[in-house]
Amino acid sequence: MAEKEINMTISLREIVYTNRKRRSSAAVSLLRKKVSRFVKVPEENVWIDDQVNHIIWQRGIEKPPKKLKVKILKIEEDNSAEVLLPD
Image 1 (cartoon, rainbow, N blue to C red):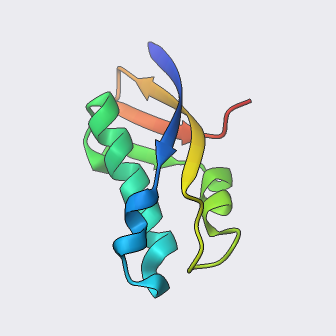
Image 2: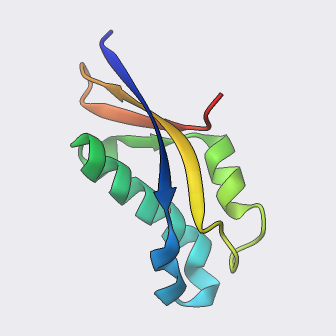
């Protein structure tokens, strides 16, 4: 299984222009969009770990984090990517 591991910080500042009652769900969508664009896989093939989702939703729907440090595993065989918390 050919995997590439990438550690990066993703900015989620764009969500401040979203309705405040939709910000955390918009942050998850934005994260999926940025990861798919960075590793060149379709958005449907980006899997976000439950712990990453918990970090985004930890402060509620109105106040997701502005930046998020993540580890991205790109799986070449499936043309998919996993978004995890760094070790």
